[in-house]
Length: 342
Image 1: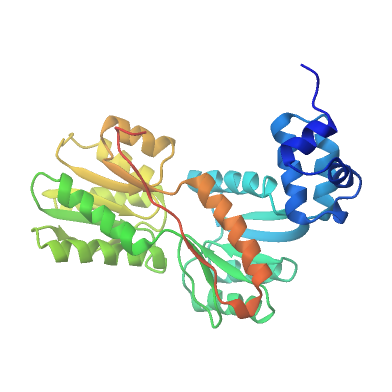
Image 2: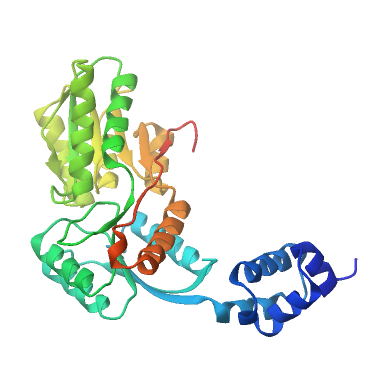
């Protein structure tokens, strides 16, 4: 078949040939919405001059420098999220995104606040995963006072100004985990609770929602006091073994934080109890294997591609809206996985 012509492109985009020519030669002379329509039409029909249109349109787009601080790059979830963020930034349709992505191995408050201040001087919008601490809150306040919007990812953060939030509704997430125990456990009993760190507000809210549901149902379940894993797989394995030593009659385990691989290792070292229920977070190779072999009952997860797109989009909106517009808040849907749907 003959390659598509400018006339074909004009017909597909429902614009004039003259408009297509202006987009190719000087896209700034054409309204932004029309430029994007012509570009997408060229992609659909495989127009031979697609590269020229892309370059022309790209020159007219606004540019934003976004900084995102994630935690420890050796953790699969954050590495996968980082990759999804890079893809989302590259394909963002409404602006040119320069993404600065940094993994923080040192999670001490002083180091995290230092990186916030270092990036805040040069970025248009900053997003981060962090725990609540006065030193971190103070660093965030400094950025907000300079007019740089800040978005908390996964766990809410506070400061003296408006901090945005992009992540799950953690109250509902905790209640969803409790629902799983209520509906799946053959008989009620003790439920061990593991969380990473009490200063992560999302984990505190998760636990609160979890206990709220079980208290409301009054079905005889006894959630134990939470044990901290400090986001470490080795500590999570040790704490899981300790919970079993102290409470051998547990009917389940709720892993509301990091260290799930250590939990799975501890569970596999024990004689298999087909009635034991374990609910954790995020779907990656280790948790997928746990679901398949029955060690893990359910995961409550982020849809990473969707999450990454929302992060980029919301951070841009926060910058465009300005400091007087209030915080941008986006709830991400919770994906539920079991052995039957992965």
